[in-house]
Structure formats: structure tokens, C-alpha cells
Length: 110
Image 1 (cartoon, one colour):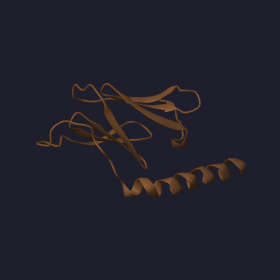
Image 2 (spheres, rainbow, N blue to C red):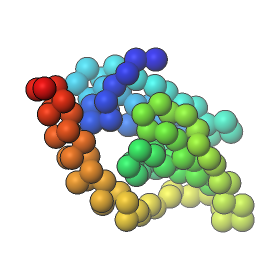
Image 3 (tube, rainbow, N blue to C red):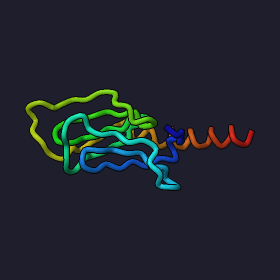
Image 4 (cartoon, one colour):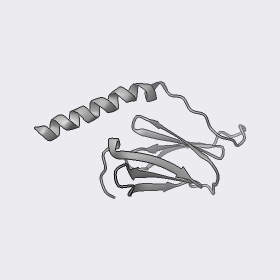
């Protein structure tokens, strides 16, 4: 697996799959497939270093840098539909991401 910085990734989901792509080249960095047969629309939310995936009544948490499954929740009894997400941390991460980029630039410039 190649190493790509978080600020160089974009995420896409389609037909029970999620992938991280290099934002400059479009090359797939990692891909993940739902452990359950899934199709249709998947919702994605980047929450810091976690990628939250809502798909056919299941909620999954992936490690955003690697695509590793961290946890899943079947939301038993809630039915199937399109997920809506909200996260306080997601808002705070905007400034954290900017700080990360600034720190990386300082490291690169010595």
C-alpha cells in the first residue's frame, strides 16, 4: 500500500465500496468493500482520522488513512435508508487539518 498524506486524499463510495484517491493523480490509495452484500447509495463523512460510512442500514467506521474497518453498527430495527451525519469533531478538524498542513510545511522546509 502506498503512503499518502491525509490532506492529499479524497474519498468516494459506490455500490458497497469505498475508496481513497490521491487528490492530484486520482490513483486509488486504498479500497474497502462492505462485509455484507450492499448496493446503492452510501453516505460518507470524514471525522478527523475516521471515515464514517452509512450503507443499507449499517454504519461503519474506517480508519481514513488505511481503510481498515474499526467498528460497525447494524442499527437493528431502524430500517434502511440514506444516513445523515453530524459531528462536532468534524468542525474542529478543519482547523486541525490546516495546522497539520502547516506543520508538514515547516518540517519540509527544515
